[in-house]
Length: 390
Image: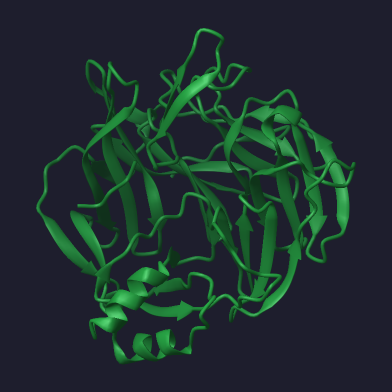
């Protein structure tokens, strides 16, 4: 069990438009509610896998992997807890970091979100939500400029969409002081800071969060279901809203429906079924699915019927899978909610304690055994890079 708390659209003045209703779009249908027997999906049978150690120096110790962006020659890791963004080469050698936490005009108070434009060698940092500032730095760490985004609701995800725009998802939870309304997806122009709604049909917004507040409006507790509607793969942003059945890819300012889900949204009174793309390759679409209910007494999110579905795009078959790495002799997660990855690529963070246990038990493959023995005592948690066969 996995634990987890063709129609062309017009683009006008940066506003993504849709012209079809979900019922009129003909794309593969994925029933996320259908009970299935879980089967093992072994990564090595479908992909090449390797472990990468990110160099751990006094300047590059990572406490928390908040987001990961990867290109053909760079790996960029944001550690929001430390307020730093680390840049490595593709083999894990440390190159540089962005570390400008402070009160100055070229600094940020805290990293809420970050994303990377590999084409322009820029890193975008959404400063502490209340301040509503978007800071831009180049790969050398030089401050480029600041954009004022104070009129936007709080975003929970952010990706570079094209040369001129970022795509953000504003969570329709009960936290933001600015109502999200029916347009949780928005474009942020990186030249002017102008924010434009993406016109995707979201009549009944569903959130993956729930906050319990006291009489003054302060948050007493917050529970989060670890499923998010945006991923970025192969340069394209994918949108799988929790209430709209269509899953889109966004390319060159246009929305392209890829799949249609059935069985999502309100299942019964107080019960919502949430699903979203976890990873998309030429051959496979992996979706994470869970039922969500708010427990009345505690206000916490209760989760049930958790699963990962794999849609095989050539055979059009759907299976409930346990993703397994033979080299680790362990199940792994292909989580991609805050990752920007090349085509047909997945990244998993492998806990050091898991590697140590498998090593001591003699369960690692020869390659992974040698990898573990090469790690330093203060190593960063390694990355498992999965490159799926095309």
